[in-house]
Amino acid sequence: GDNSAEMEEEETDPTEINYLIPEGQLDIPMLLGGAEANTFTEAGVDFKPEVTGYGRYARSLTSGEQVIGNVNQDIAITAWEQGDEVTMFGPNLAQFNLMFAQPGSGIESPADFTEDTTIGVPPWASGTSLLTRTMIADEFGIDIREETDSSEVDVSAMYQLFTEQEEFDVMLQFTGFSVAGVADEIGDAIFNPLEYWEERTGNRPFVTYFAARSDWFEDNREVAANFMEGWGSTRKHFNENLDDIMDRFGLLAGLETDAQVDVVRELFSEGRMTATPDSWDEEFIDNQ
Image (cartoon, rainbow, N blue to C red; front, side, top):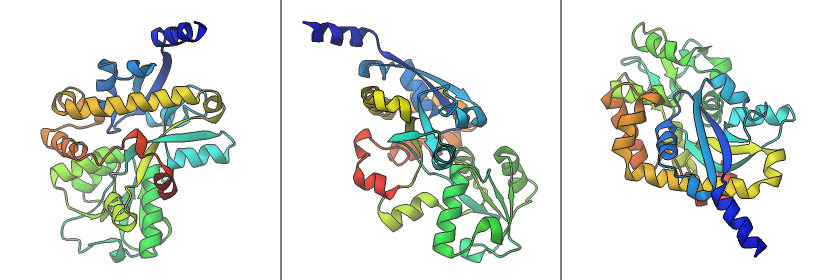
Protein backbone atom coordinates (compact mmCIF):
# COMPACT_ATOMS: atom_id res chain seq x y z
CA GLY A 1 0.00 0.00 0.00
CA ASP A 2 2.82 2.46 0.84
CA ASN A 3 4.28 2.36 -2.65
CA SER A 4 1.02 3.23 -4.37
CA ALA A 5 0.45 6.09 -1.92
CA GLU A 6 3.92 7.41 -2.70
CA MET A 7 3.29 7.14 -6.43
CA GLU A 8 0.01 9.00 -6.10
CA GLU A 9 1.73 11.74 -4.14
CA GLU A 10 4.41 12.03 -6.85
CA GLU A 11 1.76 12.31 -9.54
CA THR A 12 -0.07 15.11 -7.75
CA ASP A 13 3.07 16.94 -6.70
CA PRO A 14 5.45 17.31 -9.67
CA THR A 15 9.02 18.53 -9.16
CA GLU A 16 9.36 22.25 -9.84
CA ILE A 17 12.15 23.01 -12.32
CA ASN A 18 13.10 26.63 -13.01
CA TYR A 19 14.70 26.78 -16.45
CA LEU A 20 16.57 29.74 -17.95
CA ILE A 21 16.80 30.23 -21.74
CA PRO A 22 19.15 32.84 -23.25
CA GLU A 23 17.58 35.48 -25.47
CA GLY A 24 17.45 34.48 -29.12
CA GLN A 25 17.82 30.74 -28.57
CA LEU A 26 15.78 28.93 -31.20
CA ASP A 27 13.96 26.56 -28.88
CA ILE A 28 12.24 29.41 -27.02
CA PRO A 29 8.97 28.94 -28.97
CA MET A 30 9.12 25.18 -28.45
CA LEU A 31 9.69 25.41 -24.69
CA LEU A 32 7.20 28.24 -24.04
CA GLY A 33 4.61 26.47 -26.17
CA GLY A 34 5.24 23.30 -24.20
CA ALA A 35 4.94 25.07 -20.85
CA GLU A 36 1.63 26.57 -21.96
CA ALA A 37 0.36 23.12 -22.98
CA ASN A 38 1.72 21.45 -19.79
CA THR A 39 3.76 18.96 -21.80
CA PHE A 40 6.17 18.43 -18.87
CA THR A 41 3.46 17.98 -16.25
CA GLU A 42 2.49 14.45 -17.33
CA ALA A 43 6.14 13.47 -16.87
CA GLY A 44 6.07 14.75 -13.28
CA VAL A 45 7.84 18.07 -13.85
CA ASP A 46 6.44 21.51 -13.04
CA PHE A 47 8.38 23.33 -15.78
CA LYS A 48 8.96 27.06 -15.26
CA PRO A 49 10.88 28.59 -18.20
CA GLU A 50 12.23 32.14 -18.23
CA VAL A 51 13.99 34.00 -21.06
CA THR A 52 17.01 35.95 -19.79
CA GLY A 53 20.34 37.53 -20.80
CA TYR A 54 23.31 35.37 -21.79
CA GLY A 55 25.47 36.30 -18.78
CA ARG A 56 22.93 35.19 -16.19
CA TYR A 57 22.10 32.05 -18.19
CA ALA A 58 25.77 31.06 -18.55
CA ARG A 59 26.36 31.22 -14.77
CA SER A 60 23.01 29.81 -13.64
CA LEU A 61 24.00 26.18 -13.02
CA THR A 62 27.30 26.91 -11.29
CA SER A 63 25.78 29.72 -9.21
CA GLY A 64 23.07 27.33 -8.04
CA GLU A 65 20.26 29.49 -9.40
CA GLN A 66 18.95 26.42 -11.23
CA VAL A 67 19.62 22.69 -10.96
CA ILE A 68 18.67 21.75 -14.56
CA GLY A 69 19.34 23.88 -17.61
CA ASN A 70 21.26 23.70 -20.83
CA VAL A 71 24.93 24.34 -21.48
CA ASN A 72 27.08 24.80 -24.53
CA GLN A 73 30.56 23.31 -24.69
CA ASP A 74 32.21 26.50 -23.50
CA ILE A 75 30.00 26.81 -20.40
CA ALA A 76 30.60 23.15 -19.55
CA ILE A 77 34.39 23.35 -20.01
CA THR A 78 34.58 26.56 -17.96
CA ALA A 79 32.58 24.93 -15.16
CA TRP A 80 34.80 21.85 -15.13
CA GLU A 81 37.96 23.99 -15.07
CA GLN A 82 36.60 25.88 -12.05
CA GLY A 83 35.65 22.69 -10.22
CA ASP A 84 31.91 23.32 -10.63
CA GLU A 85 30.84 19.96 -11.97
CA VAL A 86 27.96 19.83 -14.44
CA THR A 87 26.60 16.63 -15.99
CA MET A 88 25.20 16.66 -19.52
CA PHE A 89 22.36 14.17 -19.91
CA GLY A 90 20.52 14.90 -23.15
CA PRO A 91 20.60 16.59 -26.58
CA ASN A 92 19.14 20.11 -26.80
CA LEU A 93 19.95 22.07 -29.99
CA ALA A 94 22.02 21.27 -33.06
CA GLN A 95 24.52 23.85 -34.21
CA PHE A 96 22.98 26.07 -36.88
CA ASN A 97 25.62 28.79 -37.03
CA LEU A 98 26.73 30.12 -40.38
CA MET A 99 29.77 31.98 -41.63
CA PHE A 100 28.85 34.54 -44.32
CA ALA A 101 31.14 36.30 -46.79
CA GLN A 102 30.41 39.63 -48.47
CA PRO A 103 28.96 39.17 -51.97
CA GLY A 104 31.74 39.57 -54.54
CA SER A 105 34.52 39.10 -51.96
CA GLY A 106 35.90 36.08 -53.77
CA ILE A 107 35.94 34.15 -50.46
CA GLU A 108 34.33 30.78 -51.11
CA SER A 109 35.48 28.85 -48.04
CA PRO A 110 37.79 29.24 -45.02
CA ALA A 111 40.59 27.97 -47.30
CA ASP A 112 40.59 31.49 -48.80
CA PHE A 113 41.25 33.27 -45.48
CA THR A 114 44.49 35.27 -45.14
CA GLU A 115 45.97 37.31 -42.30
CA ASP A 116 44.22 40.35 -43.81
CA THR A 117 40.74 38.80 -43.94
CA THR A 118 38.53 40.77 -41.54
CA ILE A 119 36.23 38.44 -39.61
CA GLY A 120 33.58 39.40 -37.05
CA VAL A 121 32.85 36.68 -34.49
CA PRO A 122 30.62 36.34 -31.41
CA PRO A 123 32.43 36.13 -28.04
CA TRP A 124 35.34 33.69 -28.27
CA ALA A 125 33.99 32.23 -25.03
CA SER A 126 30.82 30.95 -26.70
CA GLY A 127 29.95 27.50 -27.97
CA THR A 128 29.50 28.92 -31.47
CA SER A 129 32.97 30.44 -31.72
CA LEU A 130 34.69 27.57 -29.89
CA LEU A 131 33.22 24.88 -32.13
CA THR A 132 33.59 26.73 -35.42
CA ARG A 133 37.16 27.86 -34.70
CA THR A 134 38.10 24.27 -33.79
CA MET A 135 36.49 22.73 -36.89
CA ILE A 136 38.15 25.25 -39.23
CA ALA A 137 41.56 24.73 -37.58
CA ASP A 138 41.17 20.97 -37.95
CA GLU A 139 39.87 20.98 -41.54
CA PHE A 140 41.71 23.95 -43.10
CA GLY A 141 44.75 24.32 -40.83
CA ILE A 142 44.02 27.96 -39.98
CA ASP A 143 43.28 29.41 -36.54
CA ILE A 144 40.85 32.25 -37.22
CA ARG A 145 41.65 33.88 -33.89
CA GLU A 146 45.41 34.01 -34.39
CA GLU A 147 45.86 33.96 -38.17
CA THR A 148 43.22 36.35 -39.54
CA ASP A 149 42.19 39.92 -38.74
CA SER A 150 39.36 38.78 -36.47
CA SER A 151 37.40 40.78 -33.90
CA GLU A 152 35.00 39.77 -31.14
CA VAL A 153 31.79 41.79 -31.68
CA ASP A 154 28.34 42.00 -30.12
CA VAL A 155 26.23 39.80 -32.42
CA SER A 156 23.44 42.34 -32.93
CA ALA A 157 25.86 45.17 -33.79
CA MET A 158 27.89 42.81 -35.97
CA TYR A 159 24.90 41.96 -38.16
CA GLN A 160 24.38 45.66 -38.93
CA LEU A 161 28.11 46.30 -39.42
CA PHE A 162 28.33 43.42 -41.90
CA THR A 163 25.16 44.10 -43.86
CA GLU A 164 25.00 47.91 -43.82
CA GLN A 165 28.55 49.20 -43.29
CA GLU A 166 30.24 46.15 -44.88
CA GLU A 167 32.83 46.44 -42.12
CA PHE A 168 33.88 42.77 -42.25
CA ASP A 169 34.78 40.46 -45.12
CA VAL A 170 33.31 37.56 -43.16
CA MET A 171 30.92 37.17 -40.24
CA LEU A 172 30.27 34.17 -37.98
CA GLN A 173 26.88 34.39 -36.32
CA PHE A 174 24.75 32.98 -33.53
CA THR A 175 21.75 30.94 -34.62
CA GLY A 176 19.15 33.73 -34.66
CA PHE A 177 21.25 35.98 -36.87
CA SER A 178 22.27 33.04 -39.07
CA VAL A 179 18.57 32.52 -39.70
CA ALA A 180 18.18 36.25 -40.42
CA GLY A 181 21.10 36.10 -42.86
CA VAL A 182 19.50 33.26 -44.83
CA ALA A 183 16.10 34.96 -44.83
CA ASP A 184 17.53 38.35 -45.81
CA GLU A 185 19.82 36.78 -48.46
CA ILE A 186 22.80 38.79 -47.21
CA GLY A 187 25.55 36.79 -48.91
CA ASP A 188 27.03 33.34 -49.38
CA ALA A 189 27.24 31.00 -46.41
CA ILE A 190 30.84 29.85 -46.82
CA PHE A 191 30.96 27.51 -43.82
CA ASN A 192 28.11 25.55 -42.25
CA PRO A 193 29.33 23.55 -39.20
CA LEU A 194 26.16 21.44 -39.13
CA GLU A 195 26.56 20.23 -42.72
CA TYR A 196 30.34 19.91 -42.36
CA TRP A 197 30.19 17.67 -39.28
CA GLU A 198 27.28 15.63 -40.61
CA GLU A 199 29.16 14.92 -43.85
CA ARG A 200 32.36 14.14 -41.97
CA THR A 201 30.96 11.87 -39.23
CA GLY A 202 27.34 11.03 -40.02
CA ASN A 203 26.21 12.87 -36.87
CA ARG A 204 25.01 16.42 -36.37
CA PRO A 205 27.06 18.65 -34.07
CA PHE A 206 25.06 19.92 -31.12
CA VAL A 207 25.80 23.30 -29.57
CA THR A 208 23.72 22.95 -26.39
CA TYR A 209 22.93 19.95 -24.18
CA PHE A 210 20.57 19.47 -21.26
CA ALA A 211 22.64 19.52 -18.10
CA ALA A 212 22.40 19.53 -14.33
CA ARG A 213 24.56 20.38 -11.38
CA SER A 214 26.45 17.11 -10.81
CA ASP A 215 25.89 17.11 -7.03
CA TRP A 216 22.13 17.43 -7.62
CA PHE A 217 22.11 14.95 -10.50
CA GLU A 218 23.59 12.13 -8.40
CA ASP A 219 20.52 12.13 -6.15
CA ASN A 220 17.91 13.09 -8.74
CA ARG A 221 18.50 10.95 -11.80
CA GLU A 222 14.81 10.08 -11.93
CA VAL A 223 13.84 13.76 -12.11
CA ALA A 224 16.32 14.22 -14.98
CA ALA A 225 14.80 11.21 -16.75
CA ASN A 226 11.34 12.69 -16.22
CA PHE A 227 12.58 15.99 -17.62
CA MET A 228 13.78 14.24 -20.79
CA GLU A 229 10.41 12.52 -21.10
CA GLY A 230 8.81 15.97 -20.87
CA TRP A 231 11.22 17.26 -23.52
CA GLY A 232 10.14 14.42 -25.83
CA SER A 233 6.48 15.37 -25.34
CA THR A 234 7.31 19.05 -25.85
CA ARG A 235 9.13 18.33 -29.09
CA LYS A 236 6.17 16.26 -30.34
CA HIS A 237 3.66 18.96 -29.38
CA PHE A 238 5.76 21.58 -31.16
CA ASN A 239 6.02 19.55 -34.36
CA GLU A 240 2.25 18.99 -34.37
CA ASN A 241 1.47 22.68 -33.72
CA LEU A 242 4.44 24.27 -35.46
CA ASP A 243 2.69 27.10 -37.30
CA ASP A 244 0.58 28.21 -34.35
CA ILE A 245 3.47 28.17 -31.84
CA MET A 246 5.88 29.93 -34.23
CA ASP A 247 3.28 32.62 -34.95
CA ARG A 248 2.81 33.34 -31.26
CA PHE A 249 6.30 32.88 -29.82
CA GLY A 250 8.64 33.34 -32.83
CA LEU A 251 9.44 36.96 -32.04
CA LEU A 252 10.79 35.93 -28.62
CA ALA A 253 13.42 33.83 -30.39
CA GLY A 254 14.63 37.00 -32.12
CA LEU A 255 12.78 36.30 -35.36
CA GLU A 256 11.53 39.58 -36.74
CA THR A 257 10.10 38.82 -40.18
CA ASP A 258 7.86 36.21 -41.77
CA ALA A 259 10.81 35.12 -43.93
CA GLN A 260 12.89 34.43 -40.80
CA VAL A 261 10.06 32.49 -39.18
CA ASP A 262 9.78 30.44 -42.39
CA VAL A 263 13.50 29.54 -42.30
CA VAL A 264 13.16 28.30 -38.70
CA ARG A 265 9.91 26.49 -39.46
CA GLU A 266 11.72 24.61 -42.22
CA LEU A 267 14.70 23.74 -40.01
CA PHE A 268 12.45 22.37 -37.29
CA SER A 269 10.04 20.62 -39.64
CA GLU A 270 13.00 18.66 -41.05
CA GLY A 271 13.81 17.59 -37.45
CA ARG A 272 17.39 18.83 -37.85
CA MET A 273 17.54 21.30 -34.97
CA THR A 274 16.72 18.94 -32.11
CA ALA A 275 16.89 15.24 -31.29
CA THR A 276 14.69 12.75 -29.50
CA PRO A 277 15.60 11.79 -25.91
CA ASP A 278 16.49 8.23 -26.98
CA SER A 279 19.08 9.48 -29.49
CA TRP A 280 21.35 10.16 -26.47
CA ASP A 281 23.27 6.90 -26.84
CA GLU A 282 26.92 5.91 -26.71
CA GLU A 283 27.59 6.71 -30.39
CA PHE A 284 26.00 10.15 -30.10
CA ILE A 285 27.94 10.99 -26.92
CA ASP A 286 31.27 9.77 -28.36
CA ASN A 287 30.68 11.85 -31.49
CA GLN A 288 29.98 15.01 -29.53
